[in-house]
Image 1 (spheres, rainbow, N blue to C red):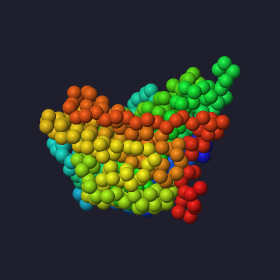
Image 2 (image 1 turned 30 degrees about the vertical axis):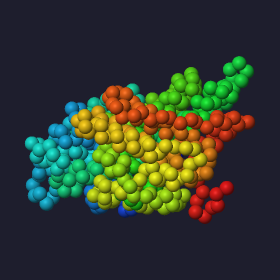
Image 3 (image 1 turned 180 degrees about the vertical axis):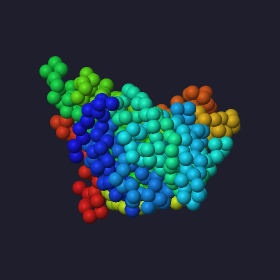
Image 4 (image 1 turned 90 degrees about the horizontal axis):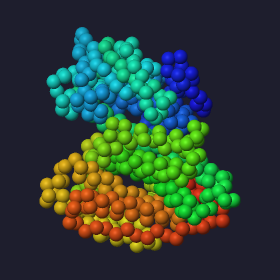
Length: 521
């Protein structure tokens, strides 16, 4: 699809919101009447051309529309399939603390009509000037602040005014504004159900947001490889220098793994109680890793990345918005901390064959799984399995002291409990981050087993050493007595005859997954 910007007399060069409005039904059709998570992200990718400002603008409209389906407002979802939406949540004083919202809704006439006068001011809202409909967070009783204090309202553009654009350092062709709301809006769902609806939508928004980061990575890293394979320094291509080759090789291994991590989590979480747990890893840990990787890619590519036409630097900068916007990566990591004790103490054997069969069949594959209607109660207590035993089942040809890692992690939690630090926000974040790192080791090992590609064993080593570094940093920063963990050695660096072709081939993780109808090579 085309993705040209337009010259707007008021805002300058911006994304073409009118074109989006005319095309967005293709995405909505994957949301209602049946929901396909990968159908949504793949259509979003195609319509935006993976142009960052466009994909995030389309994504904001998609998530707002998804709230109608999460609230089971099927008539509204069908009625507004040709509308551009926005998420009217953020207020300048609250960031992600929606429970502190000031925006108020007062009933108009008969309560059965579900019409309210909505009054407030929203801040830093994407699409807000051009959207036809706003899904607004507000309070019916402004004196309350608990989980049932929030309600959602569908507010038409005619109830909004006084837009003021907020200039940003990144994604400068979007239009983010403050604006006032003072007009009628329709209740979405039941009064006080707003947070529950948002949480249901969040389960499917985490992979969608992460897909944007992975798309940036998928575009930038081949561009760096091509640049380093074509320029010359001292009569030689930099990709052939041993230090550059090593760095690019590790970038490629990480990139292939991060793309795998996204699709692995979607496939394993789609129809199971792991949907939320795997999603929090994507919206926090993985987005931070992608951001780090794009920065490293820019550093290795050198001055080429600073040019305006280059995606190498542009994507590295734009990727910052994905994990850090209002601290979403922190919130998702804190959610994972709640599972830490059960994750580390689980003693049920993992179903390796069942999981690997699912990955062979479903990784990267679009299916209608209706993730948006997952059982919220089941998602709060996923059935974890014995971490070390499962890693042993995968039968890696490298030695990993899995039982030792679990033992040390348990000792860390016990020491934090004794010191009275276990409930402190700093350590809840650190523990949640550690669990994400440990889960990444399982994912990397599954990646090797599913693909059969020995080069991907280095993904396991990199994730193991990253976990060890994270664990040891927790000990060091807190002067804790739990024993440190030891990293393991990487495999010898491969030296292919054609580094460019070999590295680009390693990036193509999807091609390496044998499907059930295929025989592994």
